[in-house]
Length: 73
Image 1: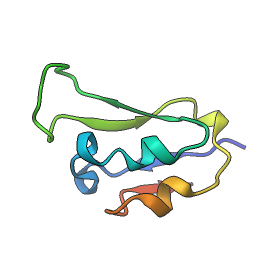
Image 2: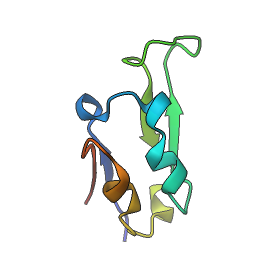
Image 3: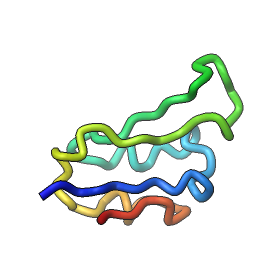
């Protein structure tokens, strides 16, 4: 069963400083990117999810997010 991992970018905050979801995910599904790779503006950086079919639905990313920005469906 495919899991949808939804990141609420309005709640995410500054992923370059937080990185909690990237560090805790045992399947390493999360990646960080910016449309402008040289930007230091935290509003431009985003956490995205790759390979959602590898998600084990452990919920660690949801539990560790300090801003409640991640949901699983």
